[in-house]
Length: 71
Image 1 (cartoon, rainbow, N blue to C red):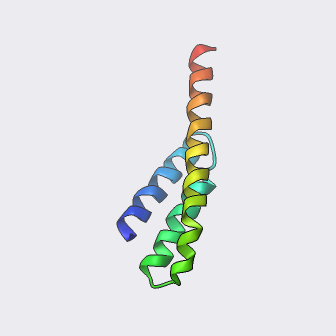
Image 2: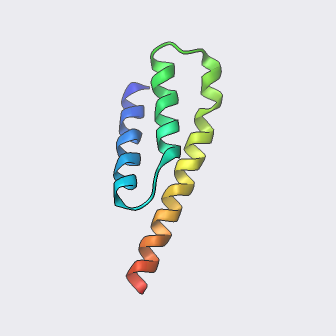
């Protein structure tokens, strides 16, 4: 859990530095960190919401890159 959280937090940070904020990736990673540290398992119910927001942010980032490349 810790390794996966760290990886996705790095991805979110990189994407955030490039163009868009990646709050979804941060939420996803932080819930994984919490679970790894012994937080209640019910916190795991929030993780998919962060993952979905992260995917949406990456799609928006890709669209912005494609628009920039064509314009």
